[in-house]
Length: 371
Ligand SMILES: C[S@@+](CC[C@H](N)C(=O)[O-])C[C@H]1O[C@@H](n2cnc3c(N)ncnc32)[C@H](O)[C@@H]1O
Image (tube, rainbow, N blue to C red):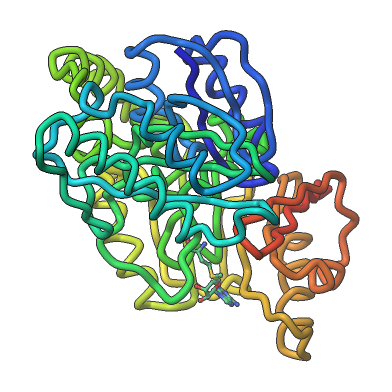
């Protein structure tokens, strides 16, 4: 069967590599998505293990519809009663890039009507819609007049890993953090440092990667568990197999620090919940005061940014440059910022640049090699 994993713009190559490692066949890269072929085992593994996927979709059908009536008919043609039980709750999520169908809410409503009517025709009654916590989630993607109707096997986006117990004001998205770590080509041997770690997302994701911990080991809800073809024994055995592969005996130090005491308290709680509190060392520390032992480090930081470049931020970025040059000789540093203008104040020449888009925000991810 065909599987489509979605991601952020700029992480498609990383996601492709992850899917290759899982054994996906006929992999194709799309905008914000990667499609591939595999069986139910691969679908379950994809949900459990893919660190840079936001959703894992299973396409049901695609078609061209110029009007709402055709959309309704095409959705009605799918035998929904074979896919999920009438007792399950469901929701439809529509994404539209279309002049003909401008309103995603309308597309979702028409799709929902067709599904409900199909059930009613067979049973005389219909499944309930629950837009907050549906058991079954259906995804509609429209480009112009081309529709893709898929089942969302994840249900909830996969950045909701289940380990975040508390958050700071602007925590990094887990999928983005995992993507940055993989884009940066961390060898998982060199000591890893985030000296502006906030709620700890980057070091926690680094620890999950290095310890071979499945990204979703904590999550219990997945959309596919509510499908008629759910194979509980298969899911349980896949999960058990990969949880048994977790290896806490790793070489590198994984370190996170921040000047904000409260942020570090939150980071510690999140690491404990992610069961990597014995792996990541957190410290409250102003970056200018850091005195880590001198050795090669792999650094990823996500400094504060503002839409406008203010004096304070200019100063902060130039201090980052100073700290990198003084305290992290021979290291590799990657800086992620939504404001590329600020990155110039670091005063080092980037040797690599990536752009990752998360919704409306464009993130710039620069590599600096320090001598
Ligand atoms: C955008 S947030 C990082 C968010 C983080 N990646 C997360 O997932 O929660 C930037 C962080 O830099 C910290 N920070 C700002 N200036 C600092 C400094 N001079 N030394 C250490 N940390 C600093 C802030 O306290 C804030 O937590």
